[in-house]
Length: 473
Image (cartoon, rainbow, N blue to C red):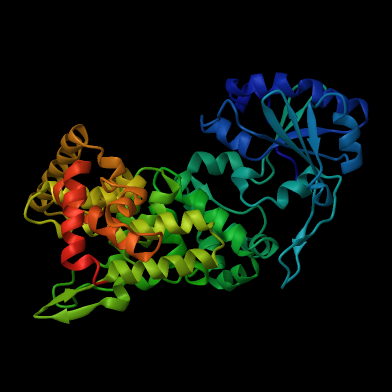
């Protein structure tokens, strides 16, 4: 396919000019060695969309091979690293900017391989043909003679303007090269408000099982990127409707069930994705929103013309742990998200007003997740019933006021017994062991029920409890 050239003044946004100046000395080094250097990929896409960040990492491609890249950047970069050298990539840093310079590639995955068989190329067009989407398959030649050249052989700029998501080659070939691109399409649909080409959608449906050769770590990383775009919902719908979600997150399409087949209430999947979109772009909070109702299909029961999901939060927390473990999430991430899932109904157990006792227990159970739990609870209301929505808002407002008031009166965020273990042993004449733990549990319950008692009153109550029933244990 012939090159499509544009001049800098015709289509390159002025905001790109500082980057062109910044990379000029590096391009000159490559030119002196007889090589060409191009800005490529996301930096061009984001510049055209006015989404370029000042600290954005820069991807460049070149006809120089990895050893030649190392030679060209030596003395210019403050630091270099070669962890990607096998795949033609040399990383470097100059000042606060991070660069990756990669030899033009023409690569393809073997049918059952998790890794690409990399072949280097001297052609920038060949390299661009192997990019994931046309909107990323543009390159800006740096440091050439005369005007700068925008190389756009696959119409990426036109696709950006028309909000269309296509692949440079056929989608079957592109997704066979790297099946993770099918998931990445969901992120571009959601994050850049692009409409997938019909051929792309059909290809994903046919090739969804190819995602099975992609490592859990890569899938997890792509899911995390999708979860922090402004509105992830369109991308999540794409994953479900094409069958991709069933390959790595089968709990999600399983939510597409009617809560009440008689009255045809909104299905749980639609509700879940609405909750995700309502939450802020906090990765772990969004994951909790995604998983918060996964226990419903297993706990659904029809009673009295209605439907119930008793203990779905407990079942859902267990399912969340299992799925996140399979996706190789960290222990810390798994614990945080599953705890939010397990607690997401706790607010609704307090229906008779927020007593001091109820507030203390709610805050103690939420711990450092309190703000996230409150946001998840608010966002979990997706009803179109305005009166019901206002009622929930009022109750949440009341809770947050009560928390604020109680924080001013006592150490609400660090609730602990009035006596420590050493004091308990002194009062009861005990040595370290399970009985001390039972006594501390009793004192903590007192603290939650009645607030701070003071050491003297706590000691008196402890002795009375011990005489009545504690020592019998």
